[in-house]
Length: 142
Image (cartoon, rainbow, N blue to C red):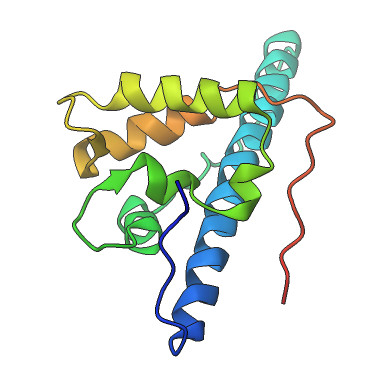
């Protein structure tokens, strides 16, 4: 089914939706990369005799993330809000299927949406989805 588009007079809103969809896709790829790097760092730390005293990583601001991705401003994220974009259409189906499975598993109240109580778990689970190295994030068009 074709995606709904804003009124032609509201081109700025359309560009903002595409930008946010790209941001969502890039954020998921970034979370995956951070997870891989963190896993490698954890392995290295176990092999060292001395622990480094690095400060813990700062958690993402899930309220800000919700505000950026929640297109209809209902305080919940639908699958379409997370993955409706030309960039997501280019995502391999097996990876998209894995993300959809993770989305469903983290929708604890089974309402088809991710709310503020579920968002942290969702993005934590998304960060653990394995993405092949040959997947490159799409370039944003300006």
